[in-house]
Length: 260
Image (cartoon, rainbow, N blue to C red; front, side):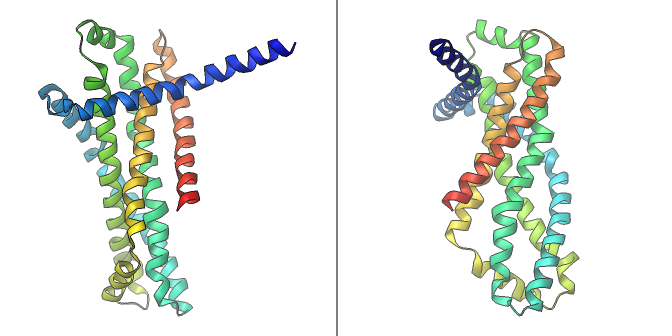
């Protein structure tokens, strides 16, 4: 009985760990392709540019609108609360902690997940079901160059750039829409932010969006490739992809909270 229990636990563990192992393989092969300068291949570069247009540029309006709304609310309530308490010297600190550390990276990761992650799962699933991945294999074209690298690189670049845009729009737009009515000048507002911007905040600004974007990209590709033999399997992979991606975003958030 103990042997069967151990065997059952082992089988479940192996089955549950296979997606994680596959994700690690995808990420590792992507890094190898990047180190091998595959990005400068004409076909790979053209595919990457097309992915960047779809993932980053077309998501820009949604990011800007979200940044303006969330930035206006955050700036308004923080300025109203802190200025009423006379805590002018804490304004920059709280804005950095809220918008740079938390709201910006998480919001952009969620936008990437719902907008581009689902599209990537569907695209890769169709490539597998229609035999495109098998054709690439028969033609000896590495998946890491044509499939993995363009998408993972585009997600990573989109995560960084969209988060930077989000933070700029939320802080500046938030002040001119709602914060402008508070008892603080724009010059003082900028001085408070720049004074509170420390090196560890810059590290978080660069590393956290990158980690979240990589998680969305690798998981989306893995879920798309996990489709079996039917198009009817795609909706379930989309649902699983969204659930797993939310879990990974939470894991990244918890890790940064622990080590920051």
